[in-house]
Length: 426
Image 1: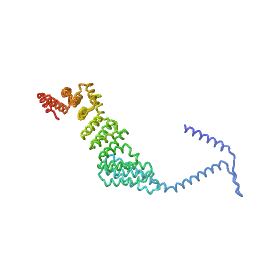
Image 2 (image 1 turned 90 degrees about the vertical axis):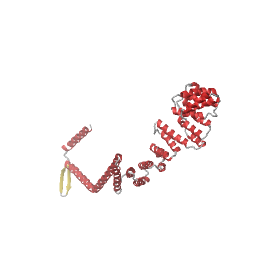
Image 3 (image 1 turned 90 degrees about the horizontal axis):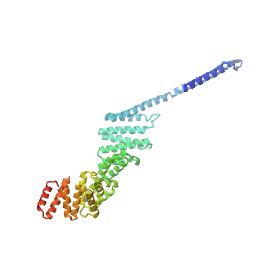
Image 4 (image 1 turned 135 degrees about the vertical axis):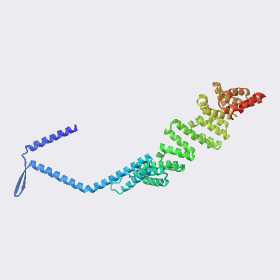
């Protein structure tokens, strides 16, 4: 469509020129005493047009001739710039392919090419990013080659190049260099240095997923359990892990925090520092209660911590793994010395709702034993001893039955119970 319009316009101009020049009888007279020159108007117009074209062409040619050195310099600069970018791409390609010696050489060549451009008339607008990335690639290659001296040198140069650059791209490169330095420190098993690099990051960069992952590894390596737990919570909020993986990591760190407590006060403070969702984890609740019992803590407090695990246990038969059920029963058994009526009602109600559950029978029998209800305790423990899948709980049940038999003077039943208890691991 555009070409058709151009043709129409060209035809229109041709028709106008033909109409104007075809019947144009005008003349131009030039008086130059003692001469008189008569010229056709069409010829004068053509002469003026030709003169204009000639002068314009001459000026353009002169301009090109004067600008020729500048163009040559610009061409040389472009060639150097292309060689620099090619070297940088080669360094990245070799680094990805695992050719670290070639990657370092290509990165150093890119640095040399960029230095050659510093004195040019048209310096690079992105020179800071190029220098920083080239030094970073060289440092990465040195790290892979176990050349710590070379890595440190290129790392220092990369930081120096981006230190006084307030632009956003320059700061991005600097943050990337600091993150890589933290990762290298982790590879060297230097957790304190990694944490120092991460602390030097700006607040926004420090909350990025990559920085938080690195901080989590560094905190765990340094043994800073509380800091690692806080970082894991942030990563969970950022959805850096799957729900199952996040729960496992948080549970493991919370378990380590509980294990680090050396007395009941430290353990109580560590427990209160956990979030409500973490305290409701059955595995963590049972572990904390057992730790409290090992430290000689209040049994009532241990039962309060065990309440979420107990509710999950009685809600469904398959809610907890069997090993965790055994640990829960043993933890509750050890806390029944001064059991309150509320917990007695809970145990009795749960056993009545599910009378065939061996763990509930065992737990109810131990509760009756604490209340000196010998007959009921014997009946429940005898039922539980035939169904319990835990050898340790069966051994404990047979020991209690042996003691009850000795108490009522039944030596035959006591001897039989002791023999069965001896056949099981304690």
